[in-house]
Image 1 (cartoon, rainbow, N blue to C red):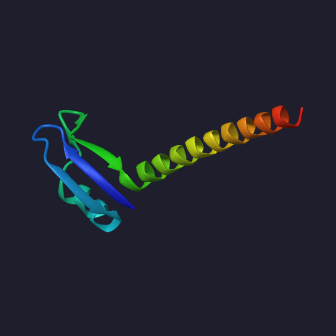
Image 2: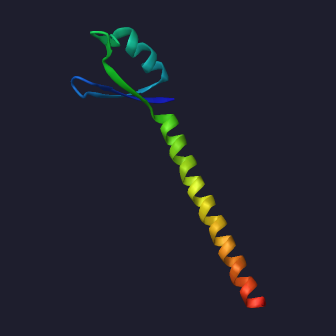
Image 3: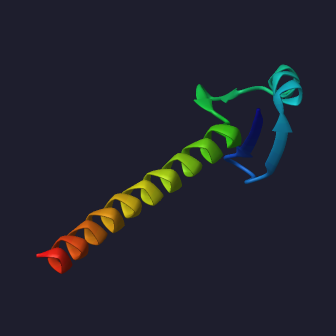
Length: 78
């Protein structure tokens, strides 16, 4: 898995793999004054969600196209 970590105070961005992610929070503190210091994004899950949405759109248009084709064929044979 790949992660994107953004420091809320400095907007510094870190791209880390799973092993680096585990050691990052051992070295750096996660909280400052009781609030999260970083925004953590799981890039691998985000890519999977994006691909799933694209497949949903493709399947929607395939069904739409098949129904239009069936309608045209029905009208021609009537």
